[in-house]
Image (cartoon, rainbow, N blue to C red; front, side, top):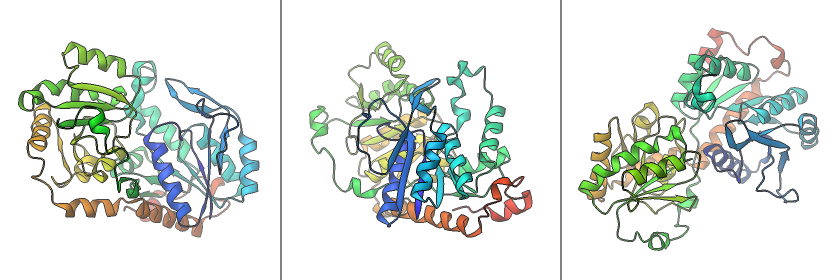
Length: 396
């Protein structure tokens, strides 16, 4: 197939969305399909850069998310390019500029649009006038409007699926967790990184994410004094960057933790830590959790529908609901590193979320949508009635 992926976020931007798209693109191409990325320009990519099968459209920084971009032109150019490429299907991965361009292209070409709903926007409303302008109701209406004329939706988790149904989305939804390219974890990218950081014989916790307020990294930092009471040499590495870094650095200084909490920026992190820890309550698919498991690191994460389902065996990790539980679980893994080394749960989990399995499930969804797609579908009042919708829902 010729597949067009439309996204506002792609490398060199660092995000779970960009990683998910790259994983899907690589696997689909390994399976013999042609994948074309339609995305925004990026100040870190020269105008004359050669990027095969990738098309960038003029963009500006997005309001309140200045490290993200939004296209400001290119509607008809994208259509001309897509027509020349003879696309069979459009897969949108954003509800903003490139998402609407993708839907326009699909309608003009009379091909179906599949959409992946990555972001739980209700968790990000504080970015816009401190939450005083947009409310959950607006997210619901915005989401329903965008998904009104798509042929199918990929939900990366049960949480996303349940949210979309709560919003009243009637479109066919299939739950397909984002996969991980396990080959990249076959060997460590930099086997000497831990030594370079002076952490060769030190218990290391890793927080890996966009350093943003909704990731609740401050909760992990707040727990560090209690962790240090039991594991005095422990060090927390905060990997990544983002708008909350300055405030978090101030918190570390105020708590006197500069020797035990380090901000590394973006580094190759695959095996540098002993335990991956997260207090985030805004994860829709938790790709970093999966990557931690792939790197054979235990995960300690805030309880939730997604994390409780993912971390269902202590050989993988565990969840917490209070700071006391977080401290206990982190300390337990640090003090007893070999107590939960049953390889079977990890092997089974990784097999289910491998990039190969991910690609196969997305392809199956493409074929299912194409098999019953009608070119007039976009002009219908709604894809299916409530009754039809419940019958066509596919979970798993």
